[in-house]
Length: 151
View 1 (cartoon, rainbow, N blue to C red):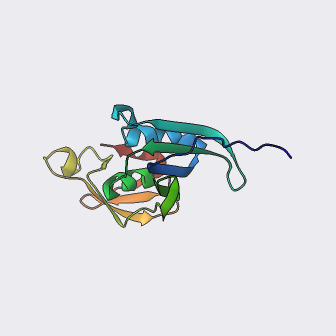
View 2 (view 1 turned 45 degrees about the horizontal axis):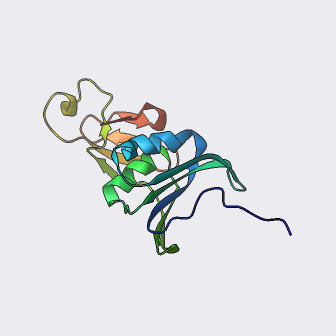
């Protein structure tokens, strides 16, 4: 019998972010500012995936992300899986999806937009959750996924 190995070490307590498109793994690291954490972090990239061909996974020990942090992930990697792990067991699975509204995460690309000229929070309506397209609440400029600039 052939011995199988895990591609990434098991996590005792914390969060595993799975099914990240390989080209978005380090964007997720930056978005969640994982480089600033002192927690043990395992990053796997270009791992074999039967569904995606290749994927990325990020495991963060003793960290359970807030809703606004999860919303940030959905902007660059919609449809990732979030697994909450306690005592080596997955106790909760979540599918990360974009909310209907994004507040204070994305910068408006219109230099004349009031959010770029006055001290106020940016606010976007999500008009396409699959392709990740946003529309500014104030100036109505539409922004596609590849044009998104995070604050």
